[in-house]
Image (tube, rainbow, N blue to C red; front, side, top):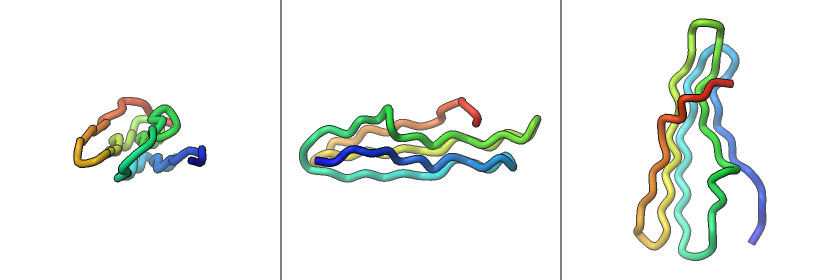
Length: 69
């Protein structure tokens, strides 16, 4: 198993975060290294994205992180 990070954050223009879907059959996914934050542009903040995880058909959804870049 490797290690790394996945980020689909909104841009500095206030864009929304992206969508991440990870399907796996074994192992561990470190969700601390996966982000989908909304971007910030002063008063125009983008919405947070969604992180979808599925291991052997068991679903875990992390969404609506209320954090801006």
